[in-house]
Amino acid sequence: MVWIHGGGFTVGEASQYIPSRLVTDAGVIVVTLQYRLAAFGFLSSGDGALPGNIGLKDQLLALRWVKDNIRQFGGDPNDVTIFGESAGSASVAALSLTPGANGNMGLKDQLLALRWVKDNIRQFGGDPNDVTIFGESAGSASVAALSLTPGAKGLFTKAILQSGTLLSPWAISRDPRQTFWGFAKRADCLPLIYNPWNIVSYHQYAMNCLRRKTAQELLDAHPQYEMLAFNKGLWEQALMGVVVDKEFLPKSPAELLSDGDYLKQNGVLDRSYMMGITDNDGIISMMSVPEKFYGNLTSRSNMAGLIRSVVRGKFNLPVETEALNVVDFVYSFPRDSSGKIPLQKFLELQTDDSFTVPLVLFARGLIEASPATQVYMYLFDAEPRLKDPNSPIRGTNHGMDLFHEFDPFRDAEFETIYFYADRDPVKFPIISNIFRGYLTQFAKTGSPVPGSPSTWPRFDTQREQYLAISSKPEVRERLFAQRVSLWTDFLPKAAVSSWFGRSSSTRVAFRD
Image (cartoon, rainbow, N blue to C red):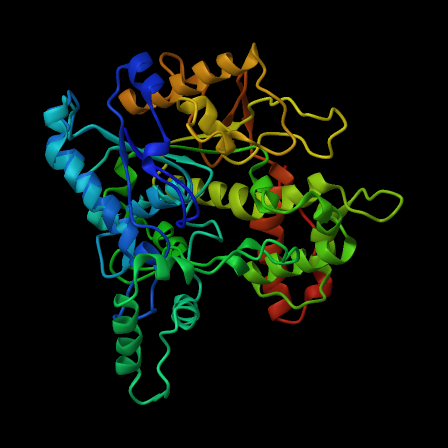
């Protein structure tokens, strides 16, 4: 099992994750890989000067190493599972879709790491033909990237995505050129004279200047998230991430997932997938917001701005349409007597936009290309205890699944989560054992449950079944059905109607 950590492609370290319980409880070999982050791994000029995706190529190299060397660790090079959470999950998807390419330097780190695993894992007793990659957050986005790239074909057999895919709005850099020039400006690397007729030399000047900077100077030039930009969707705040560079990712993730021939030719459909989210991943959107600003999050004007931002980012709808009123109703009611919107509604919008809908669409893309593809979907509910029984939120925060997956983190602050009390001494170990059992069983067999598939059915387009993971796991159908239907059925139709001037005739019709 090859772990890809998250952190928004910007922060994090592999050494933070100690997998001793995964190893000792289930007898699997776990490889944690480090890839270049921030400007070192994901800065892109939007052209050949600095294509980007270097961090993904790091991951790919690591996979190749596993393939070549895992037998020496008792592993099987032909049975490799990659897994990741959040951005790590997006990397897993990208690695499943792409060939190895110009740009995406952080992803190239990952790709090289996979190649190293392929070449060397035998020396650790592993099997280079039985590799699972897994990741969380940005690591999950990385798993998605590795799942889609042609360059990862043959490097792993299974992928686990935890809270992130390449369809997540924060995973893809929408305007890498603008990000590059903003970075160059902060690093004091802009040419004094702009010559539009010689853009190559203009880029080269900036690149040469950046190469002369120290690592600390480059870190200091890194942009910061606008934590107080309450009315912006995460897609508007995406800084550095995966880029569609025509090589590592030949086309956009959505286009690749709709290209059945591409998916078949590059082995994407031959792998097994386990993917899911926590039931309140959207809390990540307010993790660094001071408590005194919580009221701003739920103001009517902020929510209206956020809804416009998110809907425009996906569908380019006019500012005033009936469709926006429908979205406003779903995520803004019921309001309290002062007109404030429930904080949980704000979080549901962030969860659906960044995690739920991208997850469902990614799974549907695989199954629609080949119904035989093994896809297992889950919703993680750690049943956390809240500090305040009357808390305005409920559910499991982004990243809380990691506490059940790995050993206690050496950085105590990492486990400090808003709103939550100490762990439940009874339920926590039960859920931990259940979740780790699913992960390792999937890595060994391609199915998270032994025996009868009725305990966790495969995802299909008819019923879209998934497992709600808690102290008492339960099979359910259609993840957050009405909310997902809003984004996958109603709004696309509303967008088409508005483009042809018929927005007033759009009817609201949710899937059951």
